[in-house]
Image (cartoon, rainbow, N blue to C red; front, side, top):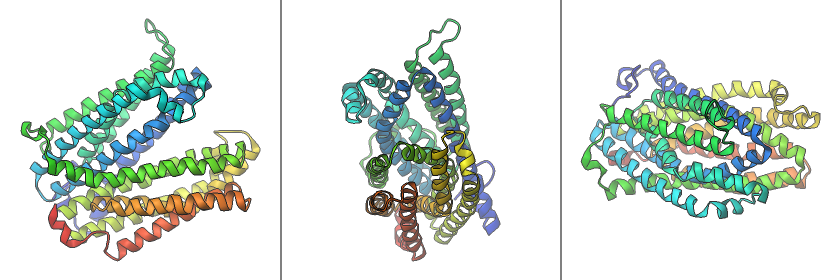
Length: 459
């Protein structure tokens, strides 16, 4: 059993300090990658905002539809990440190659299907999102350019997930940073024009994204083709029902979980809108600020998925469990520090988004409540990664459905609207949802029902 990281091999370090080092070596590149994507996302939005507010709305609505596409592609990415990690842990690189190539074939098929859906139904889909007529033309143009080549999005998710599965989180990080920087440069050139290149407006923003994704897909493909642990075998491109079914059964619950969260989010957002424009704006800004805290937990969740998968593949149940615990403890510690920052500096950070005093007051309330949610959120996200690494993707799906629909949405209405607690009620509801999921996941983990030991042999 080993990690493909150049810095450390899993089998070389077995004490607690060594395990912590391995976790950090895998988690920190993922954290940096997430941080870079978030920062550059803000810059991207800033450029689009220079075109017009209609352009911002067009991109926003399009991204809401793309979130559904991404949920599907991400579910396939999680599935292949887990299975590659398990086969690598078991020392079976041939099966890792085979499942990886089958996932690539699925990614191409799914990308083509969603591209065709976009080609034929772009306008109706945007109408379903309630897009205004004055934004529809720009939205349709942007949507078609970005989403007809959906195969690029699906390949980015799957190729990077395969590489992470062998324990290499640095390569996806470097490529992501590189293509996002390229995207910013292309945004400026294609949106506003430069030298002989005409200003293309929102079409330029879309083209910049497509070019960056094309470059990213090519670089990831080249990296896999040259990898000693992966590489491509001609016969492995033929469809294999067993591997396809493994990817579908493991990935489907992940996709459903993401979709459940998206639909639930749309519903309780409607409740928040009832509280007024200022409250909704404060909630959105507070959510944008909180996005940065997600990056830490998501990074440790990535590390946990890889390490649990590889160790279970090698039948090292106790090591898998210890990596899971250590990843969770490290994430909780760091997210607690983030919580303190949000509690004491939330209003100041909100000042970068707005100067409206009443909105800033509400941002402060939201983030001070959120400060106490941060360590709880770490448990939820990292243990979800642990369960995914153990091929147990159904259980997180079940509790996410209960949490989002049975707790968060209900209590947003009860506390925020019925009791009149406003934004405080909204964020307490979010906290209750996360607390429920954290307690259930932790109890399941402690009781050793997160994976059956006899299933480890079935890799």
